[in-house]
Image 1: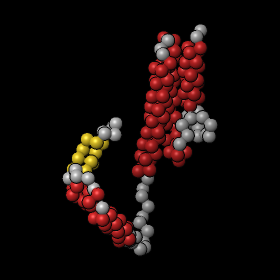
Image 2: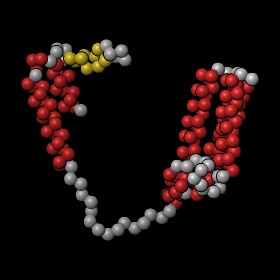
Image 3: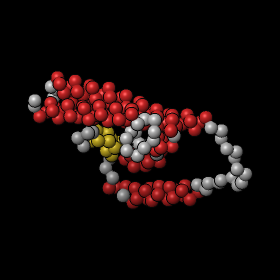
Image 4: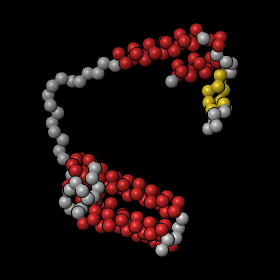
Length: 179
C-alpha cells in the first residue's frame, strides 16, 4: 500500500471515529468530545442537535474520504475535499447550534422593562471629530492643489495599473465630500 493511500485512509478513518464519538456523546455535555462552542454550552438542546448533525455529517463525510483514498485520487484533490468538508461540517454544526439556541431564547418570555432613565447618546463629539478631520483634509488639498495631477487616478486594476481617472476637482474634493 502506498504511503499516500495509507495517509488518506488514516485521515478518513480518524474522522469516522470522531463522528461516531460525537454521536455517542451527543446527549451529555462535556469538555472533550463533540461540538464545543458557546451555543452548545449554553443550551443542552443546542448541544444535542449540533452534535447529532455534526456527528452524522462527519460519519458520512469520512466514508466519502475513505472511498476517495481507495480510488487513488491525487493528494491535492483529497486535501481540497478534506478542507472543504471539514469547513462545511463545522459550518453545519455551528448553524444548527446557533439556530437551536436562538429559537430556545425566543421561546422564553421577555423580562419586563425596568423602570429608570432613558439612555441618551450624545453623538456631537463624534460628529465634531469627523468634521475636523474633513476640514483638515480639505485644507491639505487646498494647500497642495497645484501639485495634484490632472486627471487624478482613482482606481487601479489587480496588477496595480491605473484604470480609472477623474478630474482633479471631483477626485480630490467631490468624491470625499460625498463619502
